[in-house]
Image 1: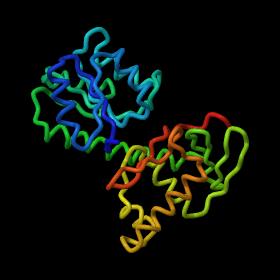
Image 2: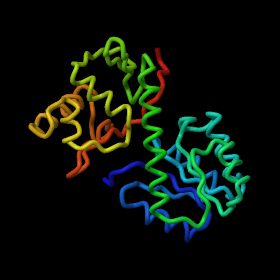
Image 3: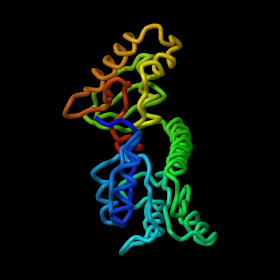
Length: 243
């Protein structure tokens, strides 16, 4: 499985879209879409997506309208989804219009790939911090079949099954939930527990124990093993919907 954040690339120019997908394939998981309809279809099928590269001059529904629709919370993605607008319109008034529509950044075409990647990483860093703060403020977080009560550190299934988490389980789970899709190396997870690189086998044990408590399986995965890299959370994380 390819590692890295999922980036939805929405561009109606086929040649440019293919170039963007190729250039972003090293370090990201780019998903191509050619218009608003394809974008919203991808959001439903590929959830969660980490960020959107959004062309302004799309056929049919334009990028500004798409951005406003996402920010209103009408579609199948968080209203605070990171959005970077791409446009041949480089006038300052166009940039202001894009930012007023809700874009996190606005890049005029043509652009250097290195700059685009740097800006993607910048909005991802900002969004991960905001997401972590938002999750910290929630008493209950839902993912898959589970609801996590942050006050009691209990997992509760839709059927009412309650699973207690140890302090280590809770710390590891909270780390994953704050940054879904991010690949954590075994060394980074070891640092989380203050052991550095002293005992990486212990990291594997901790992850396996958490997987067992979640009922993680090939058909219903929560934590994905990324070969030669580490682990990433792949289950959508949402606000509580069944108290």
